[in-house]
Image (cartoon, rainbow, N blue to C red; front, side, top):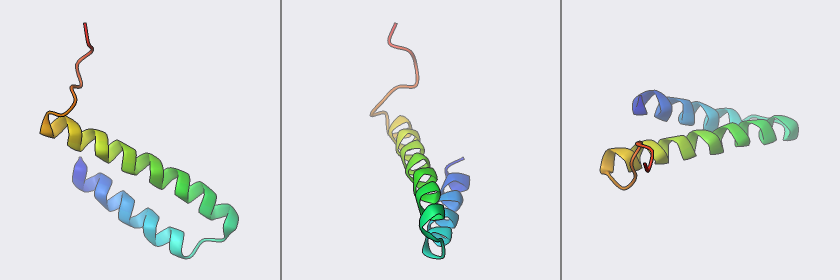
Length: 55
């Protein structure tokens, strides 16, 4: 799953380079979400956070 997410992030970065102002806002929002999602996945894999509910 991380490889797919990494590919999506790279595609969004490429799209960002060629986008107009309106598109840039949308793409940047998608990119921020993908980066946050990847950070959560990495943190779970490293054991820094748990995917289990606290109770």
